[in-house]
Length: 114
Image 1 (cartoon, rainbow, N blue to C red):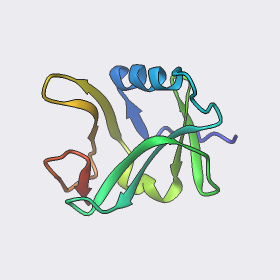
Image 2: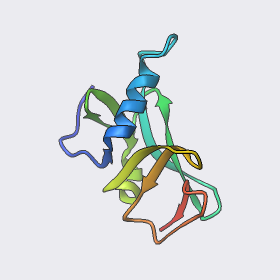
Image 3: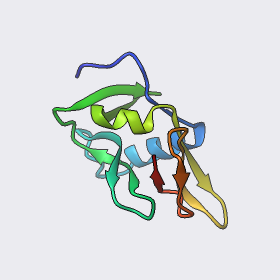
């Protein structure tokens, strides 16, 4: 797997801890990598993608703290510099996204516009 030298997104310590916990769960498919991306839809026009998937032809590959990651090369324009965090509070539990490229973000926190 060819690696890129730049890491387009940042994972906080909390996000890294949660992702590694998911990767160590029984039945985890070790051939899968963490996909960071976007797709059309959501309240503001685009929705974040964060999940385990197979590497595809147009993906760039990078490592964050021993976590193999992929991102479609075309998505970097929307996501470069984004920070993914994990919140484990009473009101919010899940991954959050802080994206400097978003002109607006929906209240749900998973949808944005550029």
